[in-house]
Every structure is written in C-alpha cells, then in structure tokens.
Amino acid sequence: MGIIAVAGGTGSIGRTIVEALVERGAHDVFVLTRKARESDNVKFLAVDYGDVNGIAQALEEARVDTVICAFGMESDAISQAQINLIHAAERSTVTKRFMVSGYDMLFKDEQMTWLPIARWARDADKAVAATNLEHTRVVNGLFLDYYGIPHWKSYLKPWINGVHVPGKWAVLPGDGLSPINFVTTKDMARFVTRLMDSSGWKPVSFIAGQTTTFKEICEIAERARGERFFVQYESLESLRNGRISFPEFVETGLEGSGQSTESIFAMFHLTSATGGYTITSDDTLDRRFPDIHITTAEEVIESSWRGR
Image (cartoon, rainbow, N blue to C red; front, top):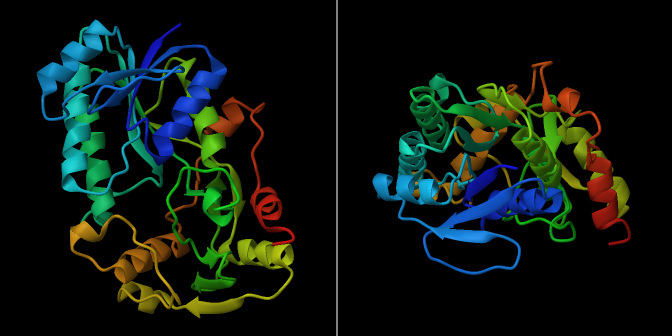
C-alpha cells in the first residue's frame, strides 16, 4: 500500500481523483491544502506552496511516495506553485513519483506564444524531467461531463465545447468533423487510480476514451432533447482571428492572461479542429486496463437530457 498526496484535491479534477482513490482503497490518501481541515475519508495536509522546504518536510513526515498534482492551471501563480511542488517532491527523501497536472491535450512548444496553458504545461514538463522522479502527464482529450451538466454528476465548472446542450445550440469549428477523443472525469480518475498500482510510468499516459466529432455530439444531443439545435459553422480563419459566434459565453478562468473570453474559446476550438485533442498513440491506458468501462457521449447525454 502506497501513500499518495493529491494537490488540488478539493478542486474539480482533484476531487474526482480523490474519490476514485478512496473507492479503490488500495492506498492511503492525503489531500494537500493551504489550510488544515478534517474529513472522515481522507487526511488533509496543510502546506504553503511558496515554501519548497516546508512542503518537502511535510511530504517526508507523512511518508508520501507519490504526488498527484490536479491544480486547475489558470495563472502564472498556480503554475509556479506546481513547479515548487515538483522541487519539493524531489527534495523529499521518501517521494519517488509525480503526476503533473494536465488531464487535457499534449501541448507543444509552438503553442506557448498564444496559449498560456501550453506554456504552463511545458514549464512543468521541463521541471519534472530535470528531476530523478518517476513522472507522467495524463493526456485524455476533452471531457464529456460538460454535455451532461447540470444533470450529470461532475465537479467541473461550466464550459462550452462546440455544443451547448442546455441552450440547444452549437458552433462547430470548421466542418465539425475533426476527430476528438473524449472521456468522463470519472473514467479518467479510474485510470489514474490504476496507474497508482503500476510501476514504470512513462512521461505521457494517454487515455483514448471515445473518438467522435462535435457534429456527432450535436446529433446525439438533438435526439436526446427531441428537437433540432441552432447550428453554426465557424471558419478556421475566424477562429485564428480570435472570433467565435457563441450566442453566450461562460468565464474560462483564463481571462487573467489578458485575453478575452471569446478569443480563449476561439483558440481552444481552433485547436480542436486541427487535431490538438486527437489521441494518435496506440500505447494507451485503455489497452493496458481493458476492464475499465468507457462511458460514451451517448450514455452521458441520453441519461442527462432525455425527456428534459
């Protein structure tokens, strides 16, 4: 039995991972927080993410062998907190493994100039690669939860990926037919949990989930809701210019980077339409753990919206 600490374990992704770890029951689980608190299921470990030596000491005292970072990457400050955590894990004499926060796409250096989250991801990758820690980053494409919220159990905050099921509208990038890999947060967390039982981590752990398109997602949603949606197609040129014709927007949490909400959504949809969220590797956790059932888009949307 290992001892795992989850940073960001009370957030949207981290909370789901913590619940999966507790459900499996194979390891002791700590949640790293800025303030001490109590819970019946997990133990909380208070840390100051600005104090590398203090974090290292806390990890050693709790005998933490594996750190899972599940920060919502929204700012330079959060990015620096993760890098400090990596340095602390390296200094800890008992910590041997580190999972970098991501649960998204495989970012590339060329994206760093126009996509802040890519810069934060690459900075973390370089920092952990410079250590002796066994490490990995989970790459899983997009989350299906967004198409079921608020009727699908999820801790994710609202977001729009092509299709807005509550509002019965869609804005599809390009022709809407670019292949995209999707998975629910709960399925992703199950794979993360199984990785905790495994040795020999690779720098990237791919989850293929289900491969489908925004157009197919829209058609599933139309069938579930029993009517046609208002559908528009956004050209790649428009997306490159930071424009996307959403009837309404939700805050992304990334506005602090100096970009508008519209331009942020345009960038993500351009990325979706040009293969950024397509898993091309055959070396996936799906193949490694074939007993994990993959929840499909149809299951999420039908169970969340049929009759509503």
